[in-house]
Image (cartoon, rainbow, N blue to C red; front, side, top):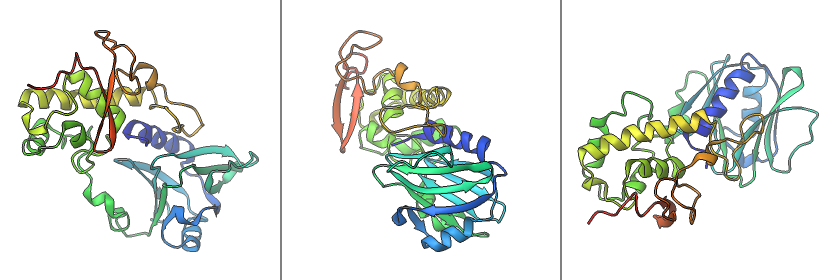
Amino acid sequence: MPELPEVETVRQDLQGLTLRSVVLRVEVLLPRTIAYPAVEGFRQGLIGACFTGWQRRGKYLLGSLDSGASLGVHLRMTGQMLWLKGSIPLSAYTRVRFGLEGGWELRFVDQRTFGQMWLVPAGVAPEQVITTLQRLGPEPFSTAFSDEYFQTALERSKRPIKTALLDQTLVAGVGNIYADEALFLSGIHPTTPAFQLSSTAIARLRETLVRVLQAGLAQRGTTLRDYRDLNGLNGNYQGQAWVYGREGDPCRVCGTPIQRLKLAGRSAHFCPHCQPELP
């Protein structure tokens, strides 16, 4: 699933390419992609509107329209937003296509079909329609994600720290890739109960998590399978990853083979030498 660096890269591309573009037509090829309203209301609410800006909240994209409405998008596991000429043949996995001025199209392509879109009416807060936004924790790059906040959030949690980092109510936008990377660079084993971390370790982890997310964003994200930017290009972070996706490969620091385990149904990659378990 795309994480903060991937979704933010798509947001930046959308901001650069679709700004002031008028939506001329909308075709919904998979109706269940539209979470709200019904498909015809979704279409009619977009046709004739102009994009005025894009924001990101966690892993959600929010496109503002000059009508006062906004378009919400969640890529989920395999969703892609692609900027293509309308003459290019459709992929079999195209779910929604937006015809824009100049012969361009914005296409939502989603192989696994878990992605969703919402049209939030004018005068309505996105959180009222996309209700999961109400439960998101602070953004990692915001001042709200402070050492004090992180300490308070973790000090009573008995969950493994890797599991806690994936909780979107604790911090928004973090997923498997960058949680593994931050834990490695912080020297913390993924199974460590969150409450056992010292205040120094928590501060180090918070700073490292922010730094790893910034590095991912600078490389325009990570492409392991499905993620592409708006122009269909791969991200580049995977080439410099410390542990994620490197099971069996030598640690870049000590040479010990990287291991992988399952925590709450999710993979965790780590170096057993650089990230020793607590006694």
